Length: 330
Picture: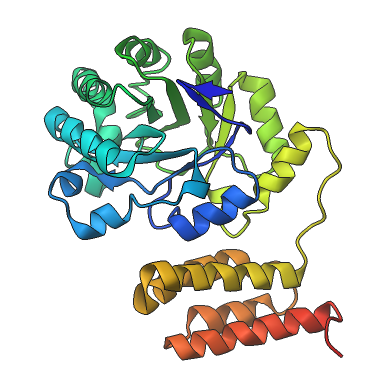
């Protein structure tokens, strides 16, 4: 498939997730076959102030391409300047606008899915970004509406396409739903019928079979997965096998899980430093280490480790146990 001038090999994308889709996690998913990856969402205000922590969220490596940088904000001029700064300074493949975040800390400032309550402002923000970075595609990730009484799809799709947006990712819950209830895939199908640009489905895809069902039921051009990939970057390998009608890859062994944990941990330490890296890894350990005998003990030891050395020792114990389980040492 293509988005603007970008050719994408696999129509299975890693969703942008705050505190999750940093370089270490993105590269693991990319190596497993993710067709497109995105940064965590980045504040336009922080970008134009050139805040160092904000800019760190944008950095990426060449092997991650194609990659989108997702930005959020409520002021068209600020969003325009931020987009131009990102393009000039980092040269991503596309800019993605966040109209989907339902978190009150974001929506109270008029950003994220708050734009769904003011479509004229959404138009202005979108047009400002499209005009500022006309060399690369601009895409949008959004929700179906603010509430069940104010669903904006599929109508808003035509508005965004006419402004120049090259693809729309839709999570068909409302802002009010947050992550409760079910994602209404009917909205994805309706949006696909209304638009000629690629539509990316998102929401309640927990397995490769869910992915195929979303393709079949909605006609979407790509599927974006978020929570299903946490602790399971192998999701993409399985998804590609299903798409190509190939035999399913074997379930990751305990040792493969342990070694992936170790690699993820070391990448975080290298990229974020000891304190931030070890703290971020705690939630990843919780996602990786489950579903096998003794998992709760290993997980508890890693998540509650009081310092970096203790965490490394707990991880070594997990790796050693995984090697014994596979009879890799005598």
